[in-house]
Image (tube, rainbow, N blue to C red; front, side, top):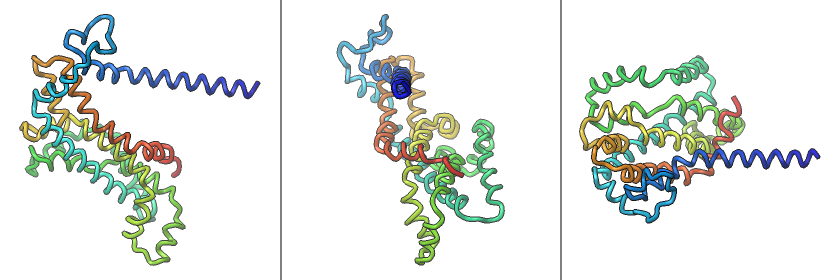
Length: 276
């Protein structure tokens, strides 16, 4: 009886989880379906989930309405640079806070964590004034530097690195490895799972960022993809099926990145934060 109850509980849990996943995927499926519909099919009642004749031309037609090639390039440059800088600085800070004992280490770590409680809207104006005074408005620098480091990244890497055995690092020191050598040759390769998690989170956040680019960018030449999408949506002559086509195209880079790093992502989520 206990065995049957355990199996029944597993089956019920699986059914509930599958049902919740399907429920969460409905908006994405509707977006994909709408991107392939004709204009008259978008708001048909009852909902037509499968297009009668997929309209693949909606994608090039929607992307041609604005300079989305430039917007994609700008977002790729900003999101890629922000992700790379966040991985580098967060791994350095996380390693230092996890494996070096120095005065004020815990105070510094708590201070970094405390910034997570401050919404960006609170510091938005001071950061804007600083960027303006530095002459970084309407530049890639103004888009990238304020996002180049996150407290969440430091926390995530620190919680992972603290699980690495000290004996491994001590053995490397005995063999004559320098501290930079230990970091680049031993610690970083072992941090692939957590860095994959951080890379996906950071890239998605930067790729989808709208508020900060909206503040610092005023020329079409440097608009990122979310800004281009907002302008696209505000156009009175844009139809919903074209808007959904552009939205699907805009979401593909994040989806591809997740699929490429899925194995490390799952492993990093399972391990990060379990100790320390």
